[in-house]
Amino acid sequence: MSRIVLVLVIQAATAPLWVAAAPPEARGGRIDRLPPGNHRVRLVVDGRRRSYLVHVPPRAAGAAADAPLPVVLALHGAAMNGWLMRHFTGLDGTADRAGFIAVYPDGTGPGPFLVWNAGQFPGNVWRKRPNDVAFLEAVIDDLATRAPVDPARIFACGFSNGGMMCYRLAAERSRRIAAIAPVAGTIAMRDPAPARPVPVLHFHGTRDRFVPYAREAGGLGGRWTERLRDVPGTIAEWVRLAACTDPAVTDVLADGARDGLRVTRERHGGCADGAEVVLVTIEGGGHTWPGRRPPVWFIGRSTRTVSANELMWEFFTRHPLR
Image (cartoon, rainbow, N blue to C red; front, side, top):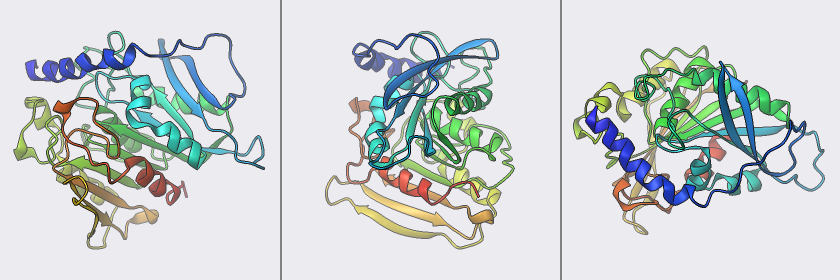
């Protein structure tokens, strides 16, 4: 447990650097249709007061006001929150260019340092077990009353603990979540059993010390990391669940000439219902978001050659609900 707390303390220590500049929260009554821009929405789920941030992109020229838009849920890591996730990923810019609604829900925890109940960890750290799957489904339902949402194009990405929550959400709400893109987060739940194969694009650095790429690499989480599937185990499990039959095909996205980090992409095809399982490996990469500068040195190196935002959006466009 002491090592788990250490991980949270290290992440929490950097959070005030971002929180201090946070804009004031929007207040007022319910808005039936959210205009382009940034909004905070509050709701009550299972007796808990919860909230999420939403970024609505500007409408493309000539687009109908009620034309349904895709949605990307972006789930923060442990000891973070939705506001930090928004700035950590820079996903708003991709949303504006591509025309999707970016949503940054808040987990639960003390003060601004929040977590997700993704399975084995870290829902038990605070001795509480919030139903975060129900909360995220409520976010989708609530957003649909405020903005034109395309129910066939609801996706999720997440960082670290948020990536773990992506896997749980896909396993338990596979008929609503079209595809997921976890970054630096593996399967943390026991025996996932999605009702349909959910396409997955997974990003991970081989020198991630917080959520190790391979079990034998160890990590700062101590016994906690031993409860998680490592990256090879996570991909093997999802390939099995998706009933993929084609041999894996690997190509090189970046040769390391620019920043010293080689990036490969391993594709598993021939899956049921047109699903796909893809692993993007950043050789020498740390606990970071590909394409973004690490906020602090000790989480490791990040490739600037490959953008997780752009790759995941291209992946999502190929995998709406069928």
